[in-house]
Amino acid sequence: MATKQQFQPPSTEFLKKLGYRFSRMLLSHDNMMPENYMWRGVVINALEDTMIERVDRKSAVLKGAAHNWIMSACSDFDQVCNWAMLDPDDVRAAYKKAILKNKIRFKQSQVKWKKYSLLLKKWQKACSVSQKSSLKKQLKLSRKEAVLGSNCYVTVALVSVIVS
Image 1 (cartoon, rainbow, N blue to C red):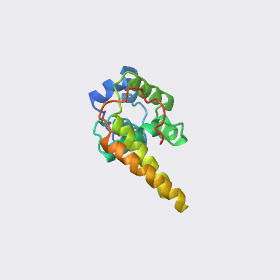
Image 2: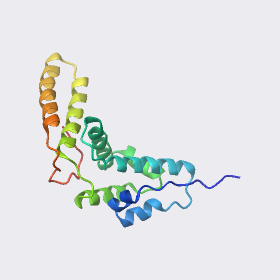
Image 3: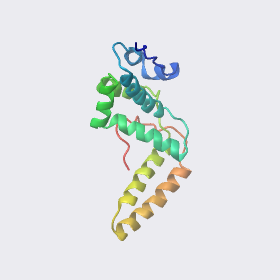
Image 4: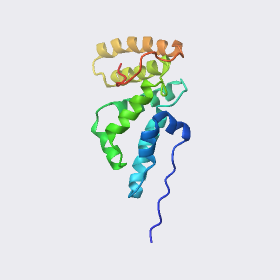
């Protein structure tokens, strides 16, 4: 006989930031199979990553990647939400609402590190020497801006994908 799968709810701080309606939907787990719990954990992990406050490069890139994954209209995010028995539009709406209410914020240096990371990927994929050289100059400037960047919060709400 199969035992009932235990669902480890996220922290109360997490639930407060995303609002009552979304938290209620997230915590309801009627008729869920073990694989639904796993995919719900993936969505929760991504949302928790967007709440990272550290400004080091690795943390900032992780936060930016989670933000972009949630905010982009990619079928991957939609599929994971469906597997988690969550409506992807409801997840995005709750996330956007938390951003607009300043419950989830980005520091300037976090955004700059994410942009640096995207530029680095372009440099790695570049084929021609002239293209690599041009991107290398941009990379040096971008890295300097990220390292010396302010730890003040971005004043404009980020309700779109971060691009370089």
